[in-house]
Image (cartoon, rainbow, N blue to C red; front, side):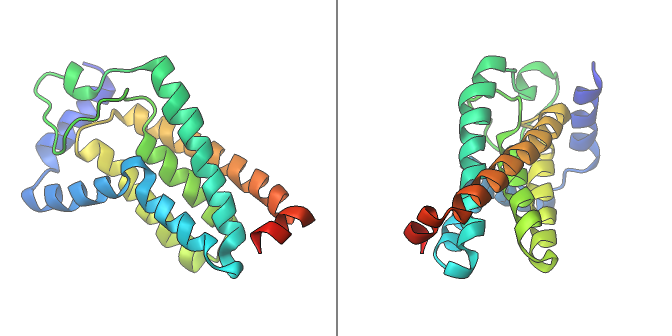
Length: 181
């Protein structure tokens, strides 16, 4: 067995409890389809003071959708851990998509990167902690390998960078500002 599998079995045998199962199931589902970050982006778009952050976050999430979910997962199509690790159980239903890279981790870190770049630390640091918990929850519930989550985090940071730079460029253009106001 490889290190990825050994880590997941260690988590299953040493960390899982009924209380944590319930808590981390809820937290992991908040990351389904990036929904918590999409809701945040929509809220940010509603207010002039936070609109630029909303634009950048939206672009980061769209980059994640296209690059991660529609391209990489289909090209790589890595089997889920439940399919390859004997004795592993999951806490939540196993998604039908490929395992690599983790979409929950990618969308969380795409949004968090933008927040770290554009909002005060009193808001962005809690978002970083929450995004990290979502990413780690994917290991706890048994639906991703550690390397899926690590790759998702790294890809998410790059998607966040793209969203931040592109959104800043577009938002600062006079014509876009008039439309977004």
